[in-house]
Image (cartoon, rainbow, N blue to C red; front, top):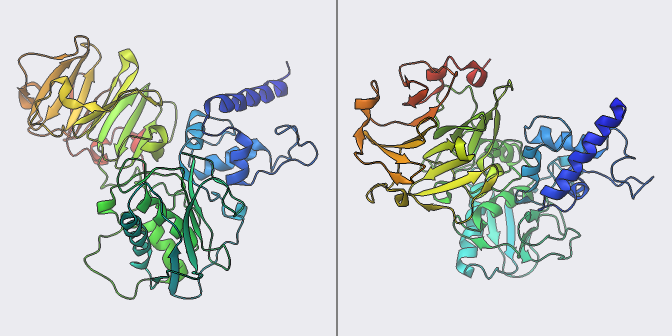
Length: 471
């Protein structure tokens, strides 16, 4: 087989893997057509892969998608690329020029009318009103815009819940995948927002939070495109965040104010907008948890994780939900049980067990089932020791030892951390096992191959340049 044939066969196999594994999307061309402007080849409509020009081929569109999401650009269907394709998301294209409606448009008035045409049965009518009105306030707080509700007649923003085909030429696809879509400012259907009634709409973490999805879609209805910033509200992939503490991220503030200007009245009681997605060279950055996973080093922060393979130059920043859709943000601890090829993630009194990209059935479970005292509501860190098959749980100035083989807590615990870990005089922020990866600094304490981290900021990791180099 010639070299060119080998390359072509490799890409063919890669695409076939996507058809098998990417079960949320029945067809790769359909995804690329909807979100990246892939066009059917008029020369050979039956052959989706061989007759495209170099600029419009599926491989080129995959590269475009990988660039948008900050992935390694190969044109191949990497596991990370397929994971993104399986995520629940907005139905608006990711790249502006592929939209079905004009871009860079805005309303020519600062008083915008809206009308709620119908309601989902998933939550009460009052809760729908609260969620939608709150989503509009997200944008009015940082601009001169005000929103006026109409109960009859035509409004600039018509809001409705509808299943599958609903008359705008952009049918929904049933539960999961596309959650909603909106049209940019203009007459007729433009400015309208449609939610997929097949989804389970909620006011909390379960299902899909109506407030978060509505706030995103209303951004489109006001003229914003999707953002490449994984921390932005206008990022196309759905990710839950605590709505009780929600503040519009800076990337979104900058975008909407570029269209309408800043708010005339500044409320000092409003929370400051969070920064963009965290940067690896931010000197004020600290982490929620650190662990190894199949040879990679994983750093967790808020809704994000960095993954760094020893053979790669740059770490990759992605949303946690890209890999594991039901894992909440702001986790407390994580550790790898490499003997069983498992990752354990802990938040509050719940823990999840993961194999690769799959959360095992029946999880999350209660952390107290492992033998952690009932009065403990949160742990600080966890460390799995491969040599002994023990997992250590750090809580305050004490730690417990769990036997992974016997699946029981060891007797004689808790013990004082400082007795067995000289140099650690209080709460541990994170811990992990690392062989041949030196960490130095007053806040990173090494005991054999185990690192206990306090206030684990980048300055404590200065001898780890392949991850923290900000040059």
